[in-house]
Image (cartoon, rainbow, N blue to C red; front, side, top):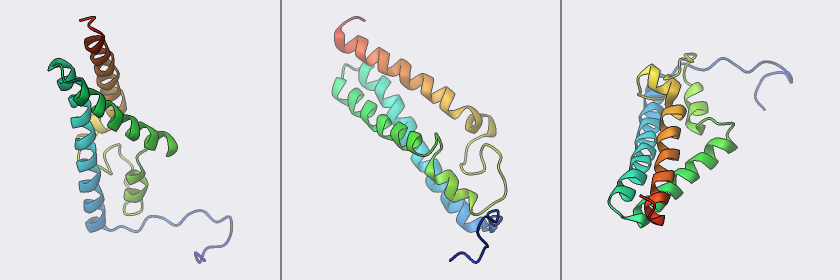
Length: 126
């Protein structure tokens, strides 16, 4: 029982700066882990450590599946939205606004290029 009549619009978020900071910190930490994994694809390929490269590929695949299941959004975004009415691209993470806005494009491109490079190195094409 939510206390709202059926069909009523959702209640506005309850401003809670302390909880928002915690969610943003967690989201930023998770983001840094996945960026490190994307860079790990490149590092593993460059160093001939195909095990490292493909482990990092698998880690990012898990992230992509989570994003797809959640409508191409991080589940932490929905949690952060509970604590603020702000909806700028970086309301839920400690990133510059431009990077939060283009995050998937920037790191998606780096990831796909890294996977292609890792496969090319593994196959001996480069």
